[in-house]
Length: 298
Image (cartoon, rainbow, N blue to C red):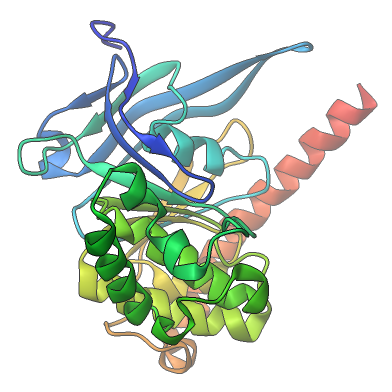
């Protein structure tokens, strides 16, 4: 692990998304892994706790191609969110190397979308979308124009003057995505953004997200517990082991794009790939439960 520079975050942190440029001892810029926009080599993260050190992530090796849609699944507590936070620059690896490819000669920017309610309730939807641009000191007219464009992209242009409490949870999550896109990140990081939604809204937003991704060409790294969601969205699925989290296996998703839920679910390959993925994930879920029971008993 190189130790020549300190981990740096030159960014503005927002409630539901974070824009950052990263370069560090464990995060460096290069053209490794066949021009991957992000690549990790034996990355680990250890936390010091009152009960002693805890390895959240261990020996993670992976790479994400520019413009790809990548989904990470794994049992609760396996380090999915920790890995996402390290990619976002909000946390630092304690071992291994995290490498970021050049984008126009610079380290890639990223925005992070969290699960649940995260909009500022005192701002209307247009102001929420424009918040990051305001922090970047973009002129008001320019940021309002950009916010209107993105509200149109997510189908909410008519609701720009509404406040978060006046719209549904699904609409609020669409605004959260628009707010992240407003700062034009190279990488869109999403930590179970649809986890709190009802099934019907989740399915609609999955298709909406795919439409936005196809239009913008962003690199997406998406964390979820749902295998259905992973198979619907991903180019590649990374299955993580129980804690300490490592990449247990990688699946390439064969479904043609553009995708719709009905066509994916009716494809004979869906059941086969679901079963293969679940067989591995079930083993890891059981391992995670056994570990938790052992910790409680100890």
